[in-house]
Amino acid sequence: MSPRVAALLALVLVAGGAEPAAAACSVHTTRNFVRKADLPDGAIAAFGIPMAERGTPFQATDVLDSRRPLPSTRFVQARQVNCALAVRYEQGGIAHTWQTAQLWWNGNRWVLVRRR
Figure 1 (cartoon, helix red, strand yellow):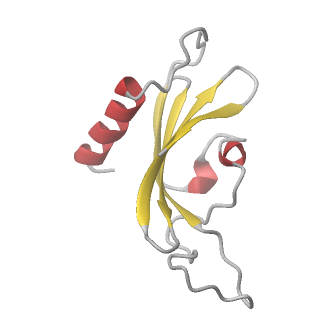
Figure 2 (cartoon, rainbow, N blue to C red):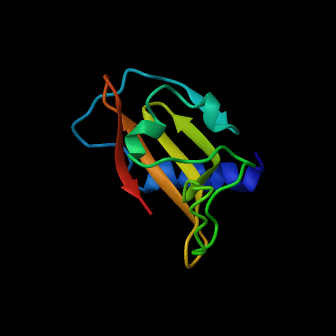
């Protein structure tokens, strides 16, 4: 992960309000993820939508192929700081965009805090 991207993800986690005010975190770690498959269990399930692995095909445009349905999102990278996890992903469709979702570990499961 480039230093610029790492700094951006750290800024999103710290300044973005990913940490719920009332929750106490007992996890103390910082980890970078370059593959969706390496994310903590349940993190992608918190999105509620399918997501392609980095480098694999996904629905990048609004032209659909019913013979080959693909997820409309694709994993790019993620960074975990304690109980906060920022996931960077591509969103396909009529306009291709880059998004960052913030998740929070509540002690039992990952919860989607914000998707933008």
